[in-house]
Image (tube, rainbow over all chains, first blue to last red; front, side, top):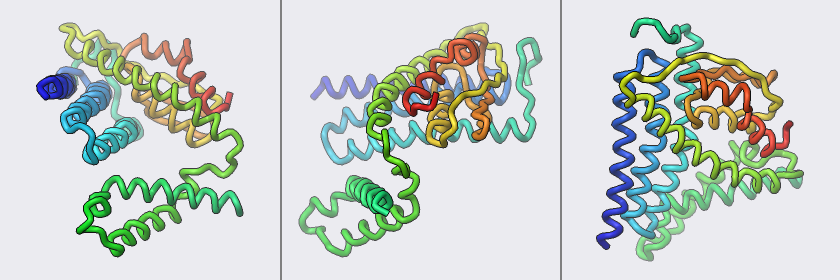
Length: 104
Length: 172
């Protein structure tokens, strides 16, 4: 039983680390588009890892299948939402940051 | 006509199984078993089927089995790319100097169908350092924001992903 606890905790910890990295990128990176890179990509893996940890902790049950479906849904919805926000910013004319510019 | 019936039946089956997974405790626990509860699931699955059966099962089912078969290794590869993408962003964010050089690139592909364009757009967003900005379906044109030069080159020069998606959907 302890082994399962350790493995699931490890998964959740790594997932949480990636989520924190995403938040840190949101603060550090210079403009709208690059910030979206940090949040969009780190959240995908972070969320999937946290849900995987929950699945391992739960074992074989109906809840595991539901968690799996949530993770699968996120893998489609995450990039689509990122793309939608990106397109909205591009169409309304947010200027992308170039190397050498000042921070916005 | 036969194709339409087939797609309706397949979609209804998938939707009903999906509903069962999310509320199957009603069926499994005997005390709660109730024909009214079950018929609610059937009715909601039917409504979803009538609205969306054309989306799930494509009209001409010629080589759908081969496409599905080719899609499986692609998904595995895509998972690997998600891990790489996250590590890439993590490296760029945590590096003291932040090695980023953002640029917007454009390229054209041979893809035309909605499903293949959506797959490529989502894949670009999931792979390291690139996010799809705009897709123009009639020309197969993509506008992509890349965080540095190497990820931009992997789309412009190597074109690994375009070839993989074209291979899966046989539109090359």
